[in-house]
Image (tube, rainbow, N blue to C red):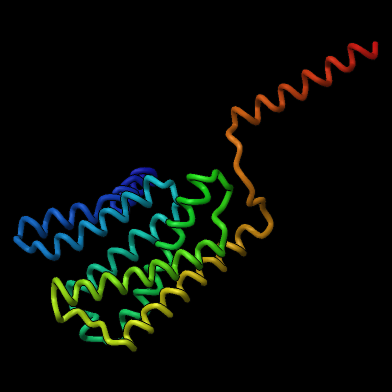
Length: 204
């Protein structure tokens, strides 16, 4: 039963956004369905990147919370609510960006914290540009006041910094250099053993 429960949780973490998008599309709520597809995209990316399970779940839950907050108009009801959402979203997305660069591409054991901070800052700026574009092209009700923009960027930077601090604490005692594939490590060990054996034979 425990294994079944874990399997159900994994399905929810990875596919709840797509299921929600399908339901909203069937109801004719196309804008809400498009937002849910962004949630689905984030969930699939976190899964296929092979993030640690805790961060995969955090990415999924945070994206879903941001979407549901939009559906319930929480950003309009509570003007402060977008700040923690920005911080949490930027935290998980900065981890995903740094993980993709360092772990998936550069084959490091862990993403570098400073890369998370830079990624978070750049992503926060990109998001504000998209909000400005949405205000100009999609819906003039999108809020783009200077104070709101500055607050969102600062919240995103704080979220990315918190994620970087957590990763630094977790990886402080472990290596952060390039990861070698097991096959290469095995071949290196085998070659070293062969060299020692040949040296012993020559001495005898």
